[in-house]
Length: 162
Image 1: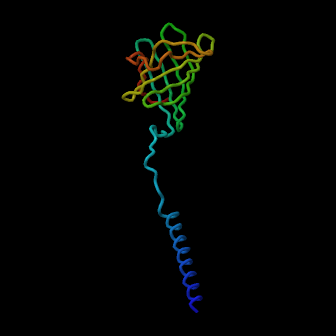
Image 2: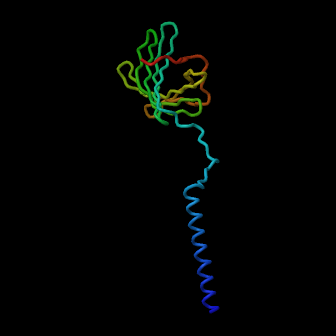
């Protein structure tokens, strides 16, 4: 008799622990979701958008249309510098903090060329960077991005998109 009672008590304990584990699993799966708060992205993926900018000074103009699709940034960039051939093309790049770094593929004087462009975004405007360049595998690149100057050379201000 003691043997049966001991066996019955053992089964009861095992069943209670199984039921308890199932209840804990149900609770954890449905209402106890841990949120990892240690990770926060440095640049949130922006909404899909299109924005337009223009530079105008004396007889010189330049137009930029910027398309943001998640983390991908593309657009068009056209330069009309007085008494020089127009440069018309497209760019593709990324934002690193407040800086847009892109490859600009453009047509000028009947030739297609590729050069690196860098813009600093400040107060809703884009300031084009300039500095010494080098050519590498057919692409013109800045020698040292860290030493680029953004001091009022070409400033693209926001305008309504056509």
